[in-house]
Image (cartoon, rainbow over all chains, first blue to last red; front, side, top):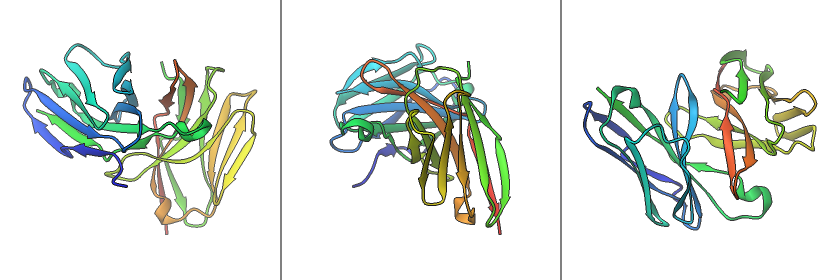
Length: 117
Length: 114
């Protein structure tokens, strides 16, 4: 099992540029989450997909952020235009359809460290 | 609004000692309390979890103590080892329209020194 795969692992871009982060969830998992991690705010949920449909996007900071899940094995998080305050580590996580507590565990990818200069 | 408050933010423990991390929550609707462990350059990974109807759960050297009336829970790491050095996140989750919406604490960076 390859686990959750994210790319790129590191991204450095200039303010105003478009940034696209990619995620491949664990095969068979039907829930996908995007998180942002910063020193000041910790881990924050940005958006949650279930069966490829966005269910909860209340954590998306503003219209510059958008996320898509065109199929069960791929999701993107796009920031356009990027700003220095977007610098953070972005994690993708997925969870399955196990019974009871088995469905609660989220498996995190290695993260993408984004630096906007 | 910080729904899950975690302390301390950093902790240094001698090898063989006990590491204790504390968390408090406000929302009594939370129904699942996991702890995640994160090593540098990696994503968080589930370490141990507890439901609010249980006061204690132990897995190896890791124990969660849960006080429902005080709305507090803590992680105890017995016989702490240098390999336990990592950031630990407490969390609380609630069923939110068919999925478990997880709120994380700010994290505790643990360093176990030989």
